[in-house]
Image 1 (cartoon, rainbow, N blue to C red):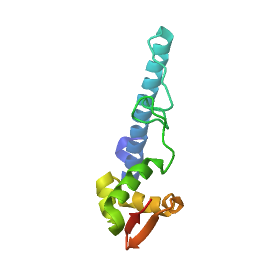
Image 2: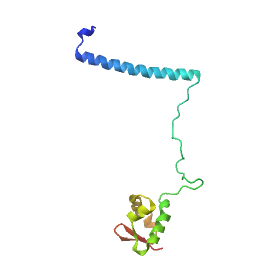
Image 3: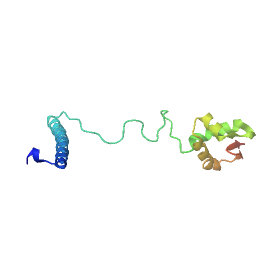
Image 4: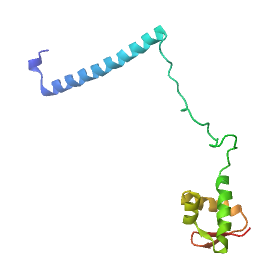
Length: 131
């Protein structure tokens, strides 16, 4: 095979093959380095799994039990509703006061809030609580 007799398509294919060969040689060099490190005992085994941090289901406060779903909002939300009185308070105001997304407040009212006696819908996105 003479380089002067190659077509442009053959030359392009040759370039692709050379690039692929270089990539494979780099990978092989990394594998050889890892093997030699294992033989000498200097290699640190790769760990897989969870990243370090708090275990799931724990709170930031040490010793405090994790709250069940919907329970974290119940007490502060009922206090805010009670403070608003019979006129009630809007979901947007509640969300700002409790530093929670309005969607979470709406969801709470339609799930957990239904089970709490005394909560009434006063207007559009406005709720009141009379214990």
